[in-house]
Amino acid sequence: MSAGSAQAPRLALVGNPNCGKTALFNLLTGSRQKVANYAGVTVERKEGRLQTPSGRPWVLLDLPGAYSLHAASLDEAVTRDICRGFYPGEPAPDLLVCVVDATNLRLHLRFALEVRALGKPMVLAVNMMDAAKRRGIEIDLPALQREIGVPVVETVAVRRDGGQALLAQLDAMADRLHPPAHGMAEGADLHAETRRLIDLAVRMPTRTARVDDALDRWLLHPAIGLITLALVMFLIFQAVYAWATPLMDTIDLATVWLGDRVGAAMPEGPLKSLIVDGVIAGLGGVVIFLPQILILFAFILALEESGYLPRAAFLLDRVMHKAGLSGRSFIPLLSSFACAVPGIMATRSIQDPRDRLATILVAPLMTCSARLPVYALLIGAFIPRREVAGVFNLQGLVLFGLYAAAIVSALLVATVMKRWRRDKGEHALLLELPSYRIPNPRDLLIGLWERMMIFLKRVGGIILALTILLWFLLSFPGAPADAVGPAINYSFAGRIGQAMTVVFAPLGFDWRICIALIPGLAAREVAVSSLATVYAVSAANDDIAAQALSPLIAQDWSLATALSLLVWYIYAPMCISTLATIKRETNSAQKMIVAIVYLFGLAYAASFVTYQLAVALGAG
Image (cartoon, rainbow, N blue to C red):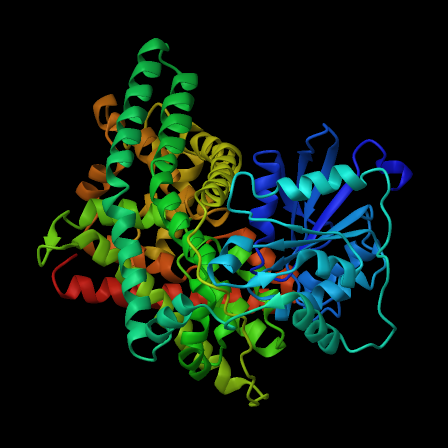
C-alpha cells in the first residue's frame, strides 16, 4: 500500500463492458459517490467511498469499461493508464478488482489475464453468479483461484448482500496487498490460457441461455425485431405524456401558488418583479418538465440495463450502414436523446474515424431532453389532448413524429456525408451481446437521481443566471415620460428582439420568440423560462402575468408560428455545450463550424418552408 493512501487505500474496479461493474460500484458505495470527468478528457470519472465490516474505509473508482489494455479507444486508454499508475493527476490504485461476468467467462477471463500481467495487487470478482447457477454453469472458484494466482470471490451486484464476500476479502488483505502469486510468460497466448482455465474450472452446459436464444429469435429477427423496436420507442413517447401529466399539473399549480404568495407579501417595485416575474416564473417554467425528462431517462436506463441496446445496435446496423453509419452509432445516438454531450462523448467506442466523425456531426439532430420542455410547451398549447383510435394520445403522437423527423433527418445527413467521403471501404460490426437481465431498481434509481441533480443544477445555475439577466434586459431602461407604447418596447431586450425580427419574420417568429432564442443558445430549455419571463414582464396586468405560459402563447401565436418553432428546434444547434464538445472530441474548430453552419442552415430552411406552407393552408 502506498504511503499516501494509508488512511484510505484506493481500489479500482476494472472489467469489460456489461460485466456488472457499475452495478457493483453502486452496491458498494450507495449514495456516497460523485461523478466528474478525468482531467484533460471528457471520459466520465466515478468515485465513491465504502466501508468494510471491520470499519476500514476505501476510496473506490469505477474505471471505464475496456475489452483490452491495448487501447483502441479513449476509454480504454484512460483505464490502462490509471491501472499502470501513469495517468496525470490520478494516484495509482492500491488494489485492482477485476469484475468478470460468470455467464461469459470465455470472453471476460482474457481481459482478467491482461490485468494480472500488470503485476499489481488484484482480486478477481466473479459477478452474476446467480444467473450462472440458473443456467447450470458450475464454476470451481478455489481451482480458479489456485490457477490464476489471485484471490477469487463471488459477487451478485443486484442483491443487497451480493458484495459481502468481496468486502470480507478486502478486510483480509487490507494490510498485506501482494502482487499475483504467479504470472504468465511474456508473449504467452492469452486465448490458450483462457481456454485452459475454462476447461479446468468451468462446467458449462450451453454457451448461451435458453431464454436468451428464445428472445433473440424474435428480437433479432430482421422484420419482427425492427417492428418491436419501433413499438418500444413509440410506447416510450406515449408514456412521456400519459404518465407525466398529473405530476406536471401539480408542479404548475405549486409554481402559480408560490408566485401569488410571494407577490402578495412583497411591496411593489423592481425586487418584486425580479423574484416573481424573473426567478419564480422563469425557473417554474422549466422545472415543470422534470417528470417527462425523468420518464424518458428511466426508459433509456432500463433498456441499457436489460441488455437490449446492443441488440438494437446489431439490428439497425444494416439500415445505418446504408446511411454511412454503423450499428455502433446507435448507442451514442440513443444517448443523445437524453443529451447530445454524453452521446458525442460515447462515440469514442467507435474505432473507425470515418464513422465516428459522421456520428458526432449528426448527434445534435437527436431530440435531447433539453428540447422536451419546448416541445411539451408548444404541443400542450396547440395540440388538443384527445385520444386517437381510442388508444393513442394525440399529443404523444405529435411528439413521436418530432423524434421520428429528427431520426430521418440524421440518416439523410449521414447519407449525404457518405457520398462526399473519400473512404468507401466496408467496416464490419463486432459487438458483444450480453445476457438479458431484469434491470435492478437500485441502479435505475441511482441513475435517475444523478440525472435529476444534473438537471436541477442547470436550473439552479445557468438557467437562473440567464433568467435574471433576461429580466434585467426586459426591465431596463424604463419607458420615457412621453412613451406611447408598452414599456418593454423601450428596454434593451425589446430593442434587440425588434431588430432580430427582420431576419426571423419569414419564419413567423415575433420579437418575443427572438428574445428567447438568445439565452436559449446556452441551453435549449432556457427558451421556456425566457418566454415565461418575457410574458410576465410584458403583461398588461397582474392577472395575465399570473397565468401559465401555455394559454398565453395559444392566444398570441398562430398555429403556423408554433409549427415553425417546433421544426426550428429539431435542427438548430441551440446548445453551446454541445458545440464545445464537438470541438473537444474532434480537436477541430473547423468541424465545429461546419456543424454550426449546416444545422442553422437546415433549421432556417425547414422552418421557413413549414411556416409558409402552414400559412398557405390557412394556419397563419
